[in-house]
Image (cartoon, rainbow, N blue to C red; front, side, top):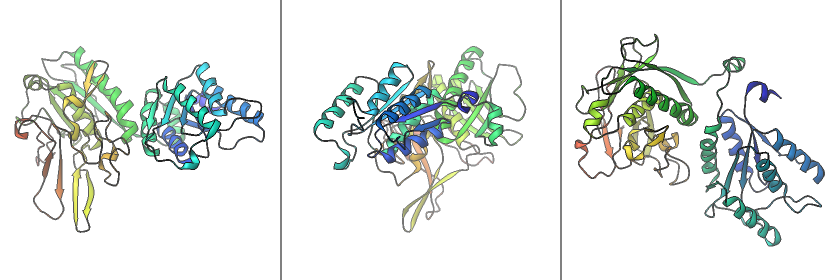
Length: 405
């Protein structure tokens, strides 16, 4: 009903139910986090015929179909040779609508009661083999499944109408940032294309993970930025030998960042990665004063700077958007020490496998609560001394500390 009027995407979540209740809940929450409406057959109709008709109708109304398959084949109605789950998949595949398939990995912990035996075991094996010939994802835990679904659904997100946002009186955290061209080595056309790629990264990748969004406005050379917005200034030469980009505040006290194109090119670095890097960190930690507290032992604690790109800052970990290389960034799970290795997604590119892990060429900064020694740095494994590497830096509005790579 209201889905058509508001443009909200409807996602049908299809799976066996008795063996996957936690997975279905994670899938439902992932849909809601992406601003999509999940539909689920939690209460089957009384007869098999009614169940088939109801499930087919749900597939027909859905904009996307999301299938989760473990090691049970599912309910086969009387007079049918296929389970309702397989019939739903066939219906969705033939409509056609986008079909997102998630298969339980062989290493996923599973109870014996949740694995079919006999004839149904052969049927579920055949179904899984059939799905394996299509594009699918494998998950090792319910949390792993949630992260994969959020990532998969991001490409189908539609921007809600402002009128619909006002009806609910709920809006996300969204900033306005002017990308200002003040350099000679990058043309307005080139920088505008980079701005559009970073805009896609923010809307599609950063916002679902961190709940922070932004609208970027490109300001060509010689033009003035709009009032009351943050600044991303792109220049040729750095004024800080230790940094290819850094952050501080505008004269009005709003967040401001600088990135240096020629200096990056001269040092063999990617200036587009630097721009993406500094932009994302400014959005997640606007004035650079946000910390994440970590209890190491009963009497020892540490506070990490909430920076989202420095742990995976090397250009080799970046990824392409419309021909533009952008920076990888960590997910909130990177700061969650209770998570075990490889239990969820810790960074967008999938290179990090544990909380607080630092990749080669990256670093992180922290303060030990009991040491009184100020900021300290942990570097990832490097092939050359850290002091020779140039990265992005942050300069506080009061002129306090700088970040070095």
